[in-house]
Image (cartoon, rainbow, N blue to C red; front, top):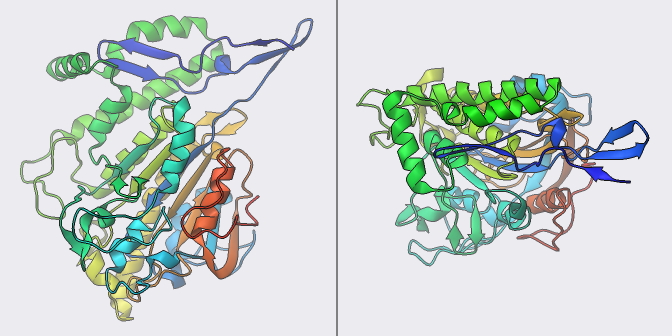
Length: 453
């Protein structure tokens, strides 16, 4: 058989300080010649992984479905996921033993973040000698990142700290990071969606990037204006279906760019949860901040700029208030609910609010066609917390969701219940297997997680 690639998967639209990667088009998929006048398209959709962290655990009675298997009803907190329920796997019974004190005393929130993707016990220190373990995302990035412009993408909504103590003698690095390139090297996350956009679609030359950004700002031009000529030429070479895909993609990029422009017009008194002024480019509204960062991840996956992403909805122990849902109390303070029904109701509303933003991201992925399915079909998106109940500070039976089908390797639409104390790191090994990365162990893993495929 002979293979012919009409358009390189790495085709980009270029302009001054702009390099716009493209989604997977039919013209990028190899054509297999099978006989005179006959040809067959090969589907070659890459597999992506994302890991999303929410702080302070969850109210499990309103999180956990009553029934296991396919025939389950979404509980109150998970109801916003109704439109993507068939793409969702609810996992019950997973545990992070190394998030427990294990002789190290208090500091459960810091441990919950540092263990989340590493499965390793953090060394208790408030100094610079912090140490935990390599996280699953960085294991994946070390293999998959060789084929993309960015090995991984780290996103968040709270500014990060690495120095000082943030939780009972644990260095702030533990509370503020879930991605670790090595045992003592946390990977910095970006919290400004505008800067993420510039990083994803800027050119290769920083001087040109700066000039182009200044020119766009001065003339109120779009990034798309800089690549318009390339886009026009490419458009004329494509078939009708690909032309439609390209038009939709460019329209989506422009819509996000307009939303980013709005964030630069914030009032001067806009502040973050610590009372510090918000930099230009960061939305006042927390939900819009989450959604814009989620849109950055979707764009990066759609254009194959990266296949690995982490996203912290908030740092461990976050005490953000949620006045937009009539919860003015601090999240961390509420998590110490003492079984007070009023506080439990507020915690549930915060949990549901986070899930609503997660649902938005999944629906964005599901709305993008790719190959014979959707972009979400070719993803594995893990969402959860390193604590179960914020009041008990326990680490068994963690609230964990897995969205997407990993290219058909995950049987989604189910609630799967595992024996309690099953290491969450077993899930990580199974996810890595499904993207072609096979390792013997990670953190406290004891094997692969069954019943996923």
